[in-house]
Length: 268
Image (tube, rainbow, N blue to C red):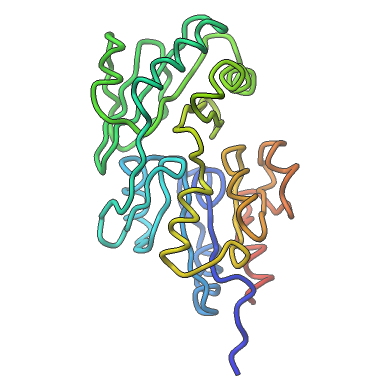
């Protein structure tokens, strides 16, 4: 009789978790995920990146399964290069939320992630954007941010750090949007009620897997809802303190094969 795997779904964040600092996946981690697959468990990527900023990485990894992108807004079939579900942020609500936050913090630097497989990233003057597969589109007229459907808004402040900005945004606009922090310089406004857990639950349902049968790996506060949903949550050694506080386990860092350390133990 075949022994069932300890978990049927391995959900991994991308940046700071599955990816090393050089944006590669180690051979050890690849082998560990292969071990889980051989035991009957599926692997799913769950990232804050929108599909347009994720698909090149998935292609390079030869990843062909489902991926949850855009902080839960998008469920993407990597093998078919097809967007299965997409949730957008109400543009009037987004504009009002920015107005309320700026009433407390002063002028913000903004970026908007447009919906779709190839959605552009629009940035206002002063917004510091990380290098990515697609050059951002600078705009000077803020109305252009709301001109087409968008997944989310990014906020930056010239003086407040990320934690302080996220807290100020929650206080000012928490009844209109969800606010999360996904990495250095990445504070986001999302549709109310949306999180990685939302998208992961949709994808898991497609795979016929329940929350209790899922183990999740992450490193930032935006992974907290995913940990709350999954049966077991593992934070990387370099994770944000807020995520470590709710994790079931803290593993090694992403550069020290933190996922593999746990997966080898469970599925070996």
